[in-house]
Length: 143
Image 1: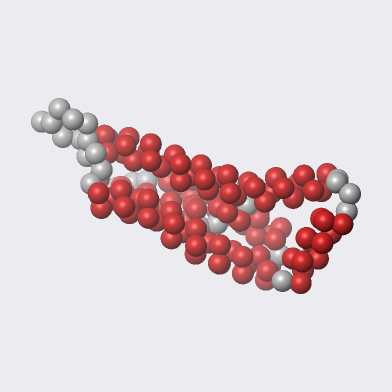
Image 2 (image 1 turned 90 degrees about the vertical axis):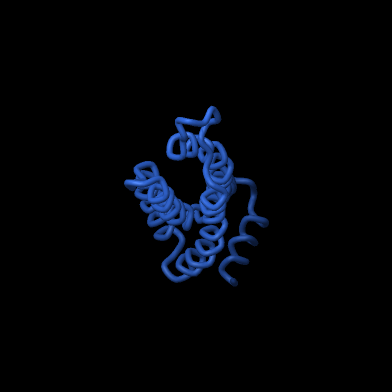
């Protein structure tokens, strides 16, 4: 906590420099990526419903069952809380630069894995999507 106050005091006392803009961009990057994740999933769930829960006998496009929608949307909020607590603690122990590198690496891996969610049945695909979305967003706000 004392280290954080020292950084904030240095930002307040110093003249506006490139460091200030860098700090603003780095602090805002995780917020914007997580906000985009929460915003875009509503569109993606409509597409997933049309792909995996399509009924050829119905004239309406397929929709995700309410339990699946709740799981896909609910996992986002669970991962945010858990990720903030864990990576905040880890950043204090290992240092912010190391944790930033780790989170970037995990973000790339789980972004690819989310896009390649697998399963033989629609519920299996949704389960792997929720699993990979959890781990993708677990560390996202730390950027």
